[in-house]
Image 1 (tube, rainbow, N blue to C red):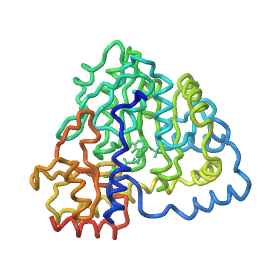
Image 2: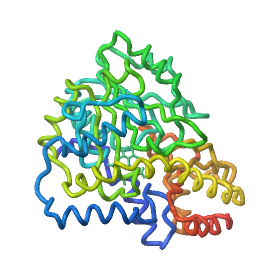
Image 3: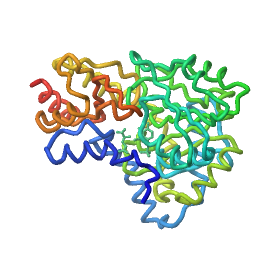
Length: 378
Ligand code: PMP
Ligand code: GLN
C-alpha cells in the first residue's frame, strides 16, 4: 500500500504516555488534567442520558448549545455569531481543524503553518492534497516574524493557521499581531484558521486576542475551540467552529460526512452549564496558580523555564545539562528519573532540536511536587 501519510507514525503523545506507563513515570507529557471535572457538569451529562437524550443530535449541534456559545462569545469578544448559520459543534477541536482544512484545501493549495505547531495540522493538510509551507516562529520568544510570513505567501496560498494561546510554547498573540495579520491579508484571497482551544487559559491579566474581536479578520476565519480544555474533560471530545455563513456552509458539508453530529448528552448538558460564566471566567486564575506553583518548584532544579503566558504548557531548556537530543533526553528522563515530557523537536517539520522539553502543569499540586522531587536529582 502506498501510504498517503508516509511520514506519519504514532503521535508523540501516545508514545510518551505509553512509555510513562511502562516505567511508572509521572506523566507531564501529553496535555490533560489529572484531576476530575466539576461534579455539576458530570451530573448534567448523566441526567441528559437518563432523560433519553441518546439519539443523533442535529448535524450542526443542538440549537440550545449553539445559542449559549453565541452568548458566551459575545460576552468574551464583543461579537455574537449567528447560531443558525455561523456555529457548528464538532467532535473536539481536532475534528473542527480537519473539517476547516478539508473545506478549503484542494490538491496543490499551499497552507502556511507556523512552527513549532500542534501535530494534527500538517497531516490534515496533506490528506487533502495540500502543501504545508513552514514558517518558523522566532527562536528566542516564538513571536511571528511578519516579513518571513509575507515572504512565504504565493499565488497558491490558500490559508494560514495560527494558534493562541500556543501549544507547545505557551506564548500568546497580541493585538498588534492581529493588526499586522489583517494588513498582510488585506486584498488577498487567503483564509485564516485560528486554533483557540486554550482561549480561557491565559495569564497575567492578558486579554485573549481572539480573531473574533477583529472584524476584518473574522470575515475570512474559522475560529476553533474545545470544551475539553475549558472544562477539564479532554476525553469528552466536544468542540466547535465559528465561521461566517459561507465558510460555515462549506465546513458543515465536511462535518456532515465526517461524523454527521457529535455526542448528544454532552450538548444538552453544556447548553445548561454554559449559562454560568464562572467556570470559564475563573480559569485564568485557576491555571495561573498552577503555573506559578510549578515554576516556583522548578527553580530548585537545573532546568531553565521559558515564560508561559497561556495554555497549560511550559518549555524548559536543558542544553547546559547535557547535549543529548531532546527526544533521547525525554526518553531517558522517563525511564531513569520517572518524569515524562514532550521533546519540542517533534513540533517542527525538520525536527529542529533547540534542547527544549515541554512540561504540562495541568496537574494536582501533589503530582507536580512529586515530579519536581524527582527532577531535583538531575
Ligand atoms: N489544538 C491544540 C493546540 C491542542 O492542544 C489540542 C488538544 N490536544 C487540540 C487542538 C485538539 O482539541 P480536542 O482535544 O478538543 O480535539
Ligand atoms: N493536545 C494534547 C497535547 O498537546 C494531546 C492531544 C493528543 O494526545 N492527541 O499534549
